[in-house]
Length: 289
Image (cartoon, rainbow, N blue to C red; front, side, top):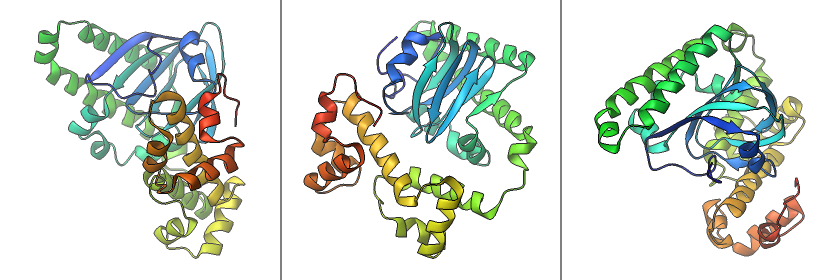
């Protein structure tokens, strides 16, 4: 399977398969990688430890994983027998079918709980769906073009079914949330949306209509990290992913992350990782920085 399976977007509307294995996942074990396409994965054998954004999960048999563009993922411990079914949809395709708009009400819950356990009977229905997509993928280009509307219809049903499953998780969707928890959740959503342009803590405090001291105290209480540490962590994750998975120059990566001064970016990266971007890119086996 191609090296850039998780990190690159795709030019086709979708890719589906049943052979994501330990060998594939180990390629993404050294550092976080930024997701470019939409992913729906179902673990059918084995287990894996993975970090999605800033949270670590144990993914096991019949766990369903939803990843949307701009998520970060890193795999850790992977069992020898692990296997996933997957469906991967290009960001353009998801935009064209109004994926974000149609699933807006459930997106915060998906973002907070990207891994959802399924009953075996439900998992088998998803497996049937994956097999249909795999068959559609194997059609000739002309036949695939003719059946594009069928794929769109299937994805719509797929998403609606997933949304219903999330709605049935009442302890996720209807649970009592503290004010601290809500502020932290909204802060993470804002950072993911704006970190390439806004690096300052005051921007996010203003967006949440909170005083800067109260905002910093609340986030520290919620997660044990300061807002600046979280912002820096996400910026650094993206920088490391681009350095390892693209041929972009350090200057281009710096600009893509909102740094207009290359020298400042170099100092920023070194401050948070202990090495310069150039040194990090040259490492054959990057450490967990």
